Image 1: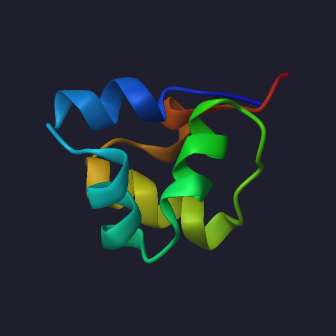
Image 2: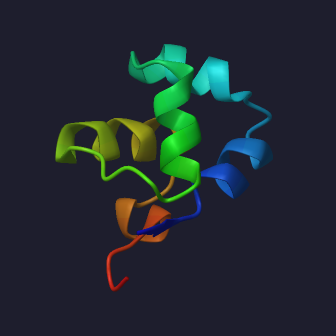
Length: 64
């Protein structure tokens, strides 16, 4: 799965650790999400989209 989490996170000026803290996961989870090596739960996807203030459809490309 491709994601745009890295781009939106950087635009918000957040580090991986800061985003992880805000959504209550480990930094490694954010790393794997940004690399497309982890499919998040719906709850985590929604939390990330809210923190980044981006519609969830913008963050994740589910066609892959």
